[in-house]
Length: 178
Image: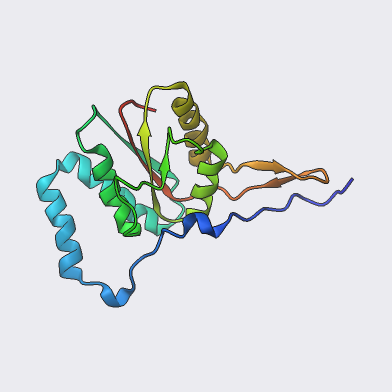
């Protein structure tokens, strides 16, 4: 039996390949800031300002925060959360969220590993519903995210490996509160 301290395991970067910021050479301050101002003019400020503020906070590092937009079907919750997620990669949208609370194959471990490799970004998790599976994921992921606790994996040879804790922010949406 080894007396060595547990080693951290690394998370596959392939999970986070969609976080592809455009090059700084394509940055146009008037256009990009104008798009945010347009958003402020067309959506309730009480909803948009916290979402944009959280996205900015994510980029500053080690945020470990979350925001949840809730309401009935058809209000545009996923669209709004997806628009904010596009600040961190053009491949994100309401139709193509990175993670889902109720998606098949989306496990607690998979969500935590994705949050760990994403680091200082805004991660969209869509479609929280009042189902046992969806609520179980939320009640496992959110406390671990806030507390900076990582998954622990057993090693085949004995002992354990501690995971990398998440440090970005979660933008969640759904028809119920977590």
